[in-house]
Structure formats: C-alpha cells, structure tokens
Length: 249
Length: 249
Image 1 (spheres, chains in turn cyan, blue):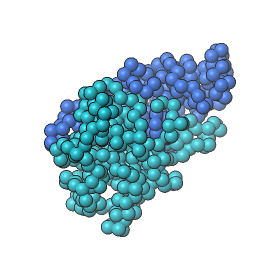
Image 2: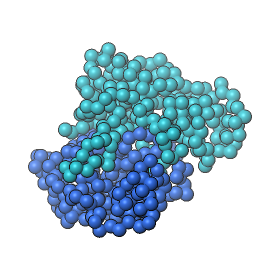
Image 3: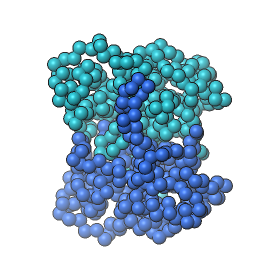
Image 4: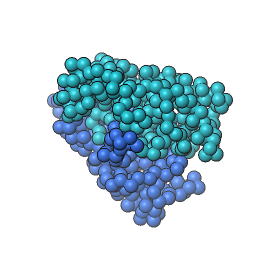
C-alpha cells in the first residue's frame, strides 16, 4: 500500500498555552483535508515545547562556575551552556564548540536539545518537553476528543548521529504506535535468522515526515497516512539504549 | 506537496548477472504504474549486491588465526568472521556477540554489512557492493537508457545506531540526488542561526522507503515520489564522517 506524507500548512506562530491540536485540525480542514483513523500526526518538538511553555529567558539564567568554564572553552554563551547542563544528566563530549549530552530522558544529542532558533522571542531558548511520550499521549487524546478520530502522534526532533554526517529527524515522543517492527527469531526461506531484528518504526516515520517539514517555512507538522503496524504500542523512551549496554559513549 | 512512498511488488529472486532495472521496470509496469522524472527509486542493497555477484560461499573461506580467535570469543562462525574482517578497514568493537566495523567505504555498521539471511543460496553470505555510489549511478543510467526517464537512485541498507535501540534504513549509495539539504548560515525571523545545519536527505528517503519495504515479503524496492531538492547532487560517501572528526569511535 502506498504511504502518503502530507504537509500541514498554515500553522501560525505557537505560544505558551496555545491549543496545538486546534491549530493542526484547523490547518488540515482549511486545506480541504481531514484526519483519518490510523493517521500518524507528526509534530516537531519545537511547537510542542512552545505550547507547553518550555522556554527559558537567558536574562533569568545565572551561569555556574562549570558553565562559565565550559562556555569559555567552547566559545559559547554561558547562559545557554548553563541551560544545556540543566537539561542533561551527563555530558558525553564537550569539544570543537559542541556539547553532546545525555538528556534527563536519556536521549543523546547536541546541547540537550536546547535551541535558540525559531523561538519567537529574543534572548530565549526552547527546551525539549519534560516527557515527550506524555506530550504525544496528551495530543493524541486531544485529537480524539476534538475529532473523534483515533490517530497516532509522533513528536520529533532533529538529531546528529555518530559516524555519519548530517542530521535526521527522530521520534522523541510516541503515542498510539508500536515503536518497533520486530523480526527477531524470524527466518528467511532458507531457514537463516534475519540479520535485522527490530526496525525503529517511529524514527523512520519521523524521518519520512521531515521530507515535507522545512526548517524555515514554519511547517511543524505532517500527516503520515498508510502505516500498518501490529506491534505493541509504546513510547519513544524505548529507543533509549541504557548506557551500560551502549558500546559508544 | 504530498510525498508518496510506493511499494514495488513482484520482484522475484535476484541472481548474479540479473538485470535489476528490467526487474523493477517490469514490476512497476505490471502494477499499472510508471516511473516519472524526479522519482527516487530506492533499492535494497541486498538485491543490488546479488545482481552484482557480491556473494561468498563459506566453503571457500579459510579463517585466519585472528578470525578463529574472534569467532571463539564471540561464538560465531569463523568463516563469516573472516568475511567480516575482509570487508573492514577497522574493527571498532567486538563484544557481546557483535562486531562493529568500519567498512572499506567508511561506513560504520555491524559485521561490515555481511549478511547470511535472504541470500537465496545455502552456506553463502552477501557483501555490500564494492562502490554503492557507482552501483546507484549505473542503475540510474540504466533506467534512463531503458525508460527515457531521469530518476534518482538510492541504494539502502539497514544499520544499527549508537545510543538508540532499533535499526533504520540508511543510504549507502546515491545518484541524481543531493545528499544534504543545507541550512548552514540561514537565519530565523529573529536573526538567530538555525541549529539544524544539514539534513541527511538520502538517509531520510531511505528511512521513508523502508516503511513499505518489508524484510520478509521480498519487496526490495520502492519509489519515493515528490521529493524536491535544489542542493548539489552527490554520493552517499559524503555521509562518511572521517574518523579524525568523529567523537564516538
């Protein structure tokens, strides 16, 4: 079955307390479309965080000694470094102007996901949602309440990777979808076990949606239509590989 | 614009020397479709490698001392370990039954991409193409010659990642497409530089295509329709981060 990746145009600037589901639903309706059962609504973390008020004003941040030292080493704004440290449970690397952290959620990414671009306010930064799976679940419930339609929701951010240049969209919050397509133990026609054991379905949906979600044209949502998955629904927290099982940190 | 991910059904078992472009073109036609200019034809490495004869029979492999030692440590077939070593320019990790290597192309992945499943022959393994960008370019040229249509070609494999559980499809060969969407230096409406600097477009297309390319149902190709990119065309070799610039190996 053909899968469609449908851009959601016409979502305006989002502020703390805004009803994101109303914004998305209105934008979909205005384009003559409608949500269908089984659609995956993919939403960029930036607007989820803004609606949730996950914003810090730099003027209200007093950098610690550690933040001042790191900021000097990396040639960064010490208030932003403090914010990155506040959002991290571990700093994995800090070199070449980059801080790679493990966030409190367990995600490994640059600057704990703290972002100064597209904030909509000067001298402020946007943080990742406190619990992106809960954000996704809340949005899903709100879509159901408003439209009567059972959609899945994926909240995404754009992360760099080890070993490969370039960044890709990944899922940081999931509701109503199986995070994995599991092949473990399945065998090919000759009886050999498959090498690929579990596909990160939510991450692939996030990457697919990014193809229509530009960074500059304020299109923070997309609908991915046609996904079929019979796996066990779960959260993006299942993507977090515990440090003890990770060979590369 | 809506992007479509169209499965290509009906490609049979592929053998060395087979004309993959004929197989795909026939399958597309049989389903009543046709290739259009700008389509991205996404093809799994497995069938590209098989068509190119990148297969080794285990009976013809004599493991070295190093392969025997590693195989004993990891509880693996020493002939396969030898094959993994032959395809690698460096072994990054060998523990918990897993060998993570840097292939001769520079890709970091499990077992140098050597795969025993879905080979179509007993006691044989499939290797990655020698030069997947060249494979993609050859396939693209063959599509143009056969159909008169200028498509892009992405050759994919399914890789694990650092830090995150699950595997995703990535691009290992690209022709006719810009590997990156670049935002470096661009600014948001408030004048702040964007945090995301370059999106790995080919990897996102590979991930999107995987959503219709099952591992067990022999669907090794998909068409991604509606991609627009004005970046500089290049190869998947541009995704290889040089070891000296990589903080995690």
